[in-house]
Image (cartoon, rainbow, N blue to C red; front, side, top):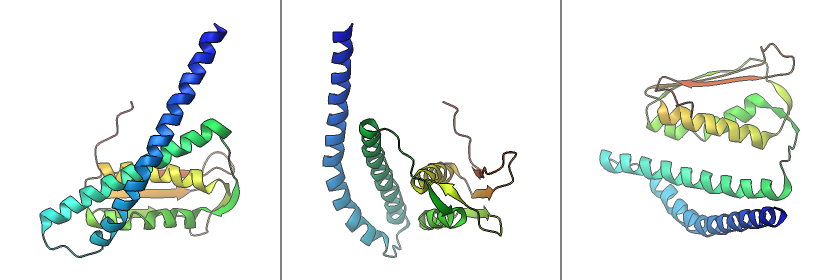
Length: 178
């Protein structure tokens, strides 16, 4: 049993190393595709079909970048374990920073965006990278499935002292529970 367990661990490590190496190999040409695409994307395109295709290409480029980053993040977690780096953070500002990166895609899809933040900025200890990943995931799904509108609400009005509530919703179809 011990030999079989060691073989399984070695096989897992070999698979992980393969995926990490492939991810690094994919990341280079992906960045070489991204740069010229961003130049093209900044141009005003009159042709609706081309503009729509550019939106699809851009969406898929961003998806591939996110996936490659997730694979690399996963490999780091496998090696070093999960580490949380707490920092005093202005959560309102962190959310606004994250929303700025979605401004273009929200406008391009003619989606309306409703944002509800407390007037007083929420400042708390958290890991900004983890919060950005969480919010990015929520926003990706909200944009992907929205028909016309997205709503984001941030509040500290929760039953538990020191907790925050983040609600991201849209008017599109619900995501399957699977």
